[in-house]
Amino acid sequence: MNSRQPGNFVSLGSALDRERPIAPTALSILNSVFGLPAFRGAQEEIVAHVASGGNCLVLMPTGGGKSLCYQVPSLLRAGCGIVVSPLISLMRDQVAALLDAGVKAAVLNSTLSWEEASVVEQRLLAGDLDLLYVAPERLLTPRCLALLGRAKIALFAIDEAHCVSQWGHDFRPEYIGLSVLAERFPKVPRIALTATADDLTRSEIVTRLGLDDAPRFVASFDRPNIRYEIVEKQNARTQLQAFIAGRHAGDAGIVYCGSRAKVDDTAAALSAAGIAALPYHAGMDAGLRARHQDRFINDDGVVMVATIAFGMGIDKPDVRFVAHLDLPKSIEAYYQETGRAGRDGKPADAWMTYGLADIVQQRRMIDESTGADAFKRVSFGKLDALVALCESARCRRARLLGYFGEQPAAASCGNCDNCLSPPKVWDGRVAAQKALSCAYRTGQRFGAAYLVDVLLGRSTDRVMQFGHDKLSVFGIGNELNEKQWRTVMRQLVALGHLQPNSDAFGALTLSDSARGILKGEHEVMLREETGTGASRKRGSRTRGGPAAASHDASGEPNLLGALRAWRSETARKGSVPAYVVFHDATLEGIAAIRPKTLDQLRGVPGVGDKKLERYGDALLALVRATPG
Image (tube, rainbow, N blue to C red; front, top):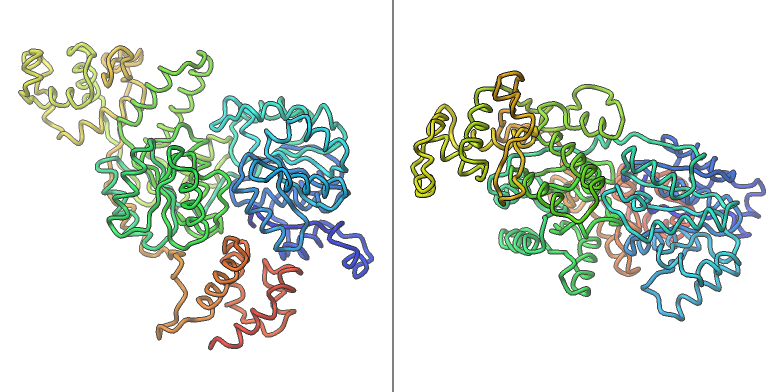
């Protein structure tokens, strides 16, 4: 189920009311407007609770159908549902989908002219809107609050509610002001929704939005269609090119980088390698950035290389992979960003390269930030949890779910690199003692590369300059090679036994726990890198690329290919993304049953009444004209 599904039944009009004298129900709206046969998980319970006037907090993974939880009750209740969203692109796409389904929806944000905004305001006051999407900064203006006070409001939906938390990964100061909704509109139900929030963030959402006594509906955070893989960073750009070429040629994907310069360089390198890649970051011209986003949304097989400025509100369902070339800031950020893959429920990849420099850089950024000590402590804790996920030799999914307080169904998911190619662990106590001794005896003023040189007994100019070739630790590590020692160093930092030296950039110093290691009081089990084992086991998995099922054995376009071509042309004429017309799953359903009548077509999930009316005849004609 997708987050851009339409629907208002109460005001969808008197014609529908005359045809159906019985008052609409949540299920009838779901079927008639959205074309869906049944709710999933807790959706029905949430809809019933909000429709009856209750407040609640909803935590549901990306692609889990959060939008239905406020759209359906908005259509059951009298008045207009007000959806607070910080994402202009998401507002635009959701409203386009709602309008395509015959729902009266509009936006109120900075993209509108004064005249356009005035028309929307008058429609709201006249009761001519079912759903209105409002940016938080617009909603908090005295003019908008006064407008809402004069209108009939069905409910308030606060989307991306984690933005209210200063402990969250995407804090937005304007969200704090949304506490005014509980104060000024106490009788209007409020539903706060997010895909990512740990216990600390949930508590702050509840407090700031006045939801202390409201129930919390927490769906499973599991995205079983996403395969998680984290690899040791060697040459990240080369690794990325091999990953895309080998697994996702022709697929849409997102690549996240930690800096604007890296975005530009990576996009250029991918383009030179024949991959349709575009850069996106806040330093670009706004018009060019918007054009790149539109190409990514509307075209097939485009790879967007971006900073984290890109992604929130992007509702493209067929993103087949999300890759990270740099370490995110937290597990919440990682989960949110990887969740943009596979929204259609088909197989997708979350792939990341990770190395020692990532940990050192993130720790230094936190240490040098101007945040209060409490904020730094929380930030360090979140980084440690993410590093533990990266270094884990056990199921990635189980560790990820455990972070959000969810008990996994099994110890092994069978769909992450550690489950597919279990890494070996070895007793690294002696190696750890050698590495820690080397860091200590060289003055705790040098980085991993220098320490490895000393351990391997390399008489470099720098080693000779400092006289470290005379130390007892010089050359004591020849049982391991350079790559193995760098892996040891990385894991010692990840385990907290080594940490960045705040007085010397890039240098590593011993932590309090190092003393116990040096005394032999604690075991140190280290992960042995498994190379590309997980990659080799992917052969049985079917990719869902744009051309995966568009031709039959003879090379002639089959029905699914014809349906996709029709959808692209229809979307182009309507100036909307292709998935606003129909999702891939709906086209595949049509291709599978080859409907001969409107009634048969209406039975395909995703084909609601208005879409049947608008597209039914054209689709049936296309089915008849395309050989089976």
